[in-house]
Amino acid sequence: MEEIRSIVARFPQRELDIRRRVVRDAHFRSICSDYEEAARALRHWQQAIEEGDREGGRKAEEYVGLLGELEGEILAHLDRP
Image (cartoon, rainbow, N blue to C red; front, side, top):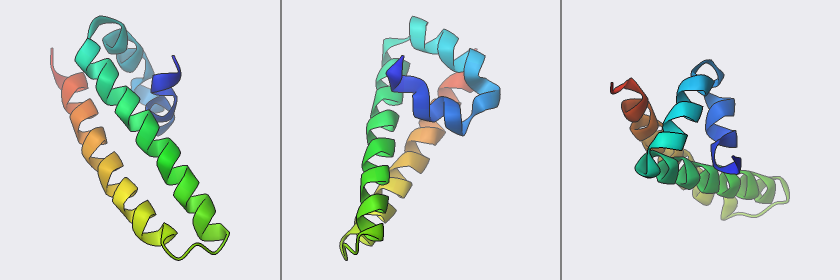
């Protein structure tokens, strides 16, 4: 379940809920996959910043915002019955 690695790392206390929901809900699985892709992109741009890429800071900031939005969606799904 590669698509939940980053979200489980972000919310380890919700791991069981995440694993249960990802098995049952295709839409939730898709959001988690989007989260994983955005987390990977953020890591890329953070590395680019370390290597002196001037554009990296702006891109990293965009992905931080996107991850925040996706976290909100994921938590909303997890809080539903």
